[in-house]
Image (cartoon, rainbow, N blue to C red; front, side, top):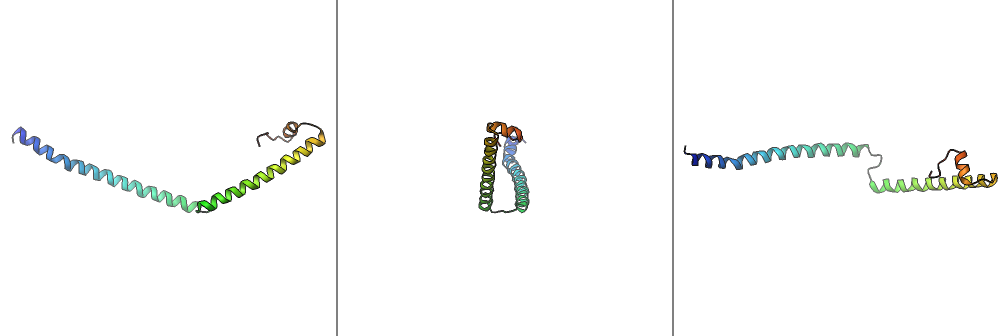
Length: 101
């Protein structure tokens, strides 16, 4: 075989090697997709409520309840501060509550 023929022989193999390499990569990616789908299905099965709109609605409801309770607590602390004739900050300290709470 002449050197020139050998070169052509090798270059004729390149597309086959690339295709085989791509097929290996595709198979690995398909496996990764299946594993990711299985993880997604597992996570979805663990959800209490898979409907995102219902979940958001429930969180909003809980936040409103929290805010109402916080407002009542703040009002009560205001009454206590008024009764003791001390600043609200002092009442927060007495009850070990951070002002940001």
